Image (cartoon, rainbow, N blue to C red; front, side):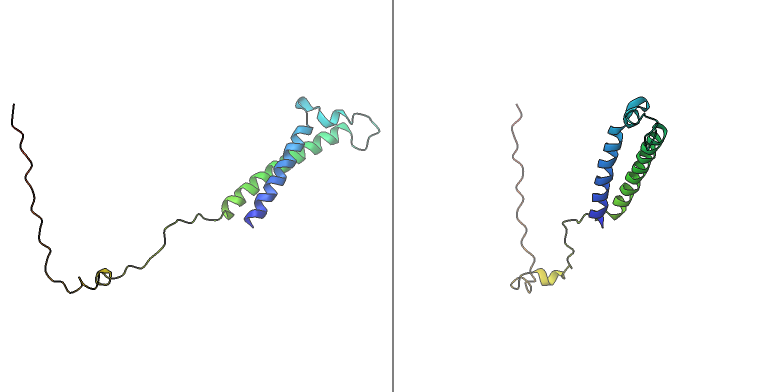
Amino acid sequence: MYVLIIVLTVIVAVLLIGIVLIQKSKGGGLSSQFGGAGNVMGVRQTNSFLEKATWTLAAAIVVLSVASAYLMPKAQSGVEVRTVAPAAAQLPAANQFDTEAPAAAPVAAPAETPAE
């Protein structure tokens, strides 16, 4: 479903680019080519069609963008969920019955430097 929304968004974006490029600033554009009175679409209808098409495609881009944000697949973290085993099960078998505490290593005193 997400891929379908993205494909529709790209198609609508390309159509919107085409509609905007057909138009000319200051109201010229495609309507200037259909200026004759005997044409099927007059100047006024062409301008209103291009304007309606622009607003419709812009609204479709907004709706598809919001839909794609909600349908976007969630990112998976690389962390696996593991169950924690008891501490005794994690010890090696030889140390499991060892009850003596390990001997503490002697701590060496820091060497003193003579004051000069």
